[in-house]
Image (tube, rainbow, N blue to C red; front, side, top):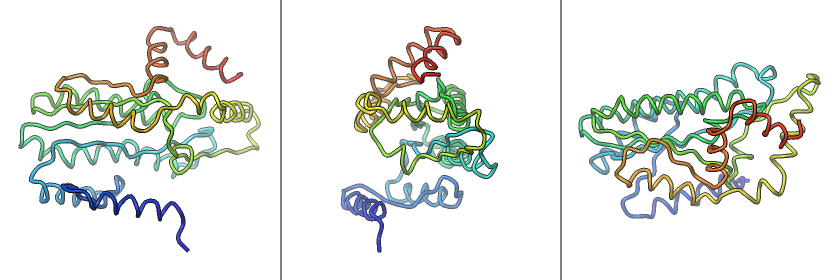
Length: 247
């Protein structure tokens, strides 16, 4: 019996494979061999790689104290180390061409935080720092680095891309757990989520606008939240989030 998710993934792969000038190949950001093979396959098929989009990632949420270290490492291996390794995989090729664009998908969670997100936000803050440093480190090589910061997007992030850990015996954390889940599951929040094409359009703009712009926000909520974060001091901004969560 085949699960629906595998069937949907296979169907999408078949649709992509049928398109002209498209190569579908395996790439696991936690597998160095697959990264090397995918880069080589792309260069063999098309002659060059002009753009790398680092979009792989998931969110580990829950009290930090409750997370076993292997799952802590998995979060950073996927969201940070994998991004670094794929970037290193294309840099020699782009550097030899004297051109290229690297787009790293961060999140509003790379600039602001929610409780229980120490691991996820830690990785996204890392992506922001890595990207910002590379932005001017690679300029001399003719390579552009862009950061895309989506807000709430209507995808299955809360399903297959969400790793939640909790220990109900740790009573002190449970009010925060309940508050966060009741807010994230609210009709208001889901109604304000942007469609995935919003992020796709922002990525396209980042690649094609011909500028040295570093950060691109995706979604009206991302614009509002990040503007507020920039304008307000820590106590005021965090206090506002606590009030929204009922904490």
